[in-house]
Structure formats: C-alpha cells, structure tokens
Amino acid sequence: MHIKLNIVVGAVAALVSGAAMSQDLIVKIGHVAPTSGAIAHLGKDNELGARLAIEELNAKGVMIGGKKAKFELLAEDDAGDPKQGTAAAQKLVDSKVNGVVGHLNSGTSIPASKVYSDAGIPQISPSATNPKFTRNGYKTTFRVVADDVHLGGTLGKYSVNQLKGKSIAVIDDRTAYGQGVADEFEKGVKGAGGKVVGREFTNDKATDFTAILTSLKAKKPDVVFFGGMDAVAGPMLRQMKQLGIEAKFMGGDGICTGELPKLAAGTMGDGQVVCAEAGGVEGEAKKSMDDFKAKFKSKFNVDVQIYAPYVYDAVNVMVAAMAKAGSADPAKYLPVLAKTSGYKGVTGIISFDEKGDIKNGALTLYTYKGGNREQLAVVR
Image (tube, rainbow, N blue to C red; front, side, top):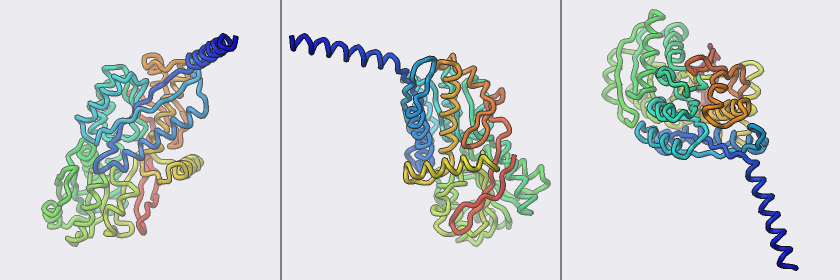
C-alpha cells in the first residue's frame, strides 16, 4: 500500500511539474559585446544592462500568448572584432535565440546584421552609430541611439560655433565607427564655415601617437577631434600634454566615458574635453534615468559607463513587442517591433522609423571637471 501511494504521489508530482513546465515559455535573448580586450569595461556595462532587464522581466512574470515567459540571457563576447562578431552571431542563431541585443561597436554590428537578417532574427543595437548599420535594407535591424550623421555633424558645428575653433584637426582609428564619426564631424565643421587643417589616422590598438601629433602640432590646431574609443583617447591626451598641444579635445560617445579621466592619467584640463553621447534625457525623463543609475549601482556596485540604459531599454522594447504580438516567434513579433512608437524608456521615448532608426534621437554634450563628467546640453 505504502509503495503504491508513493508511486501515485510521484506520478501526480510529475504531472504537476510537467504542466508547470508546459505553461512556461522559454524566451532566449542573445547579447553580444566586447567583454574582453581594451574596451571590456564598456562591453561589461552593456551586458549588465541586459542582465538587469532580464531579471526584472522574470520577476514581473510577463505573459506572452497566454503563457508565462521565462527569459534567458545568452551572452557572447565579440572582443570588438568583426570576425569574432559574425561567429558570435552565428552561434546565437544556432542556439535559436528569439532576438538579439547588440553588438556594441559598429564594426561588429554591421557584419553581424546580415547573419541575423538571413535567419530572420530581430537585432537591436544599443550603441552602433555608423549610418550604414540601418541602411542595408534588412528588416531585422534596429537601434535605440542617434547615428553618426547626427552626432558627428552636431559636434562639427559645435566646434566652430560654440568653441570658436579656427584651426581644427581630425584623427580617426580607421574602424567603421571612428572613421564614420570623423567624416561626419569634418562635414559639420565645413558646413559651419570652419577650417580643417589636418586629418590623420591611427588604429584602435595603438598606444604611441607622437608622429601624428607632432605633425598636427606644426599646424597649431585649437581643436583636435578623435574618432575612436576611450582606451586610445586617454593615452592620446597624455601625449598631447607632453608635446604641449593645448587644444580642446573632442570626440563622440566612444570617448565619452567615466573611465576617460583615469585613462588620461590626470592630464585632462577642466573643460578641455567636449564629447557627445547618442541619446539624452531632459525634464521629467531625467528622473527615470537617475533612478536607473541608482538601481544599477546598488545591484552591481559599479557606475553606469555609457550604454547599459540603452541595452536595458532595447531588451524591454523587444519583449514589449513579443507581448503585444502574443508570440516570441521572430517572424510574428518582428512586424510589431518595427511599429514601436512612443515607448517610454529610461533613455527617453523610443519610436522606430522605416529604416529601424530611432526617431528624433537626442544627443547629450559633456565635458569633464575635476575628473568627473558634467553635462553641458541636450540637443536634438
């Protein structure tokens, strides 16, 4: 009798757990960023933004098509390398992810976008700003930040109109991002009637810039723009100081980080650096961003670097589309995602245009004082 009862109880338990499992819908979200290499601090920032979103979604008990969704994060490292980026993308496709948030760099996001497009899997980049990313005609490609046409052009105009730059030098790191933003900056300078006195290039692994900086010093620039990331910008600022180049230093979101003062090792003058970050909040939206930063710090015991809030919003926008479509099947929720309009995120209002770009994207201009980043203005 005792044995029979155990068998019955066991059978009932198995049925109950089986029913519970069939009730749960497993939704896999892929995330890719460089979590190794020189900009690993930015890649880890992105990944934590995704982890926070996933944990909160699981705690909320989101329903998709009448089933409780259980979200899983599949995180990959692309080391900021295009080849590794496409390999990571293929791995996520093979793992049958329902959607992907990433990659961080334009140089990895662009080649990976074809892999996702071929598989019909939606991809939202939180930080790839090269215009080409959304201009290949892929229906699966989206981003939640303004592109470099807007960012570079705005900085170019700012260098002439606000900083009163008379002789402006431009350096880029020859990546898709660095070269792209530098090209748009140069157009912005010329459009505002400014003069570019020199254009030099380096690479994203370089540490010695003596030759190019010496060449530019002879042209007496009052503004130096660098298209690239903070890991290169920091040593470049140190060497500018050593060579006695007292120009303002400008860059896009790649240099606009909390780490830049550390990487420059105390060589930055107050107000010397002016940089812009795609995105930006003002007015009442500022509170939600401040709340996010506080929550992030208390959870992970690190400050937000740059893009974590954009990753967080991208995950939530994707899941909101699944819930609305009543399905996590990429083919079913993709059309709903494409029509996203007026979504209130921590980074502001998210609506996509026909290319998958964010509409009316904001930019935030920053400088640094006493080793801390200070907001100058939000521009659209």
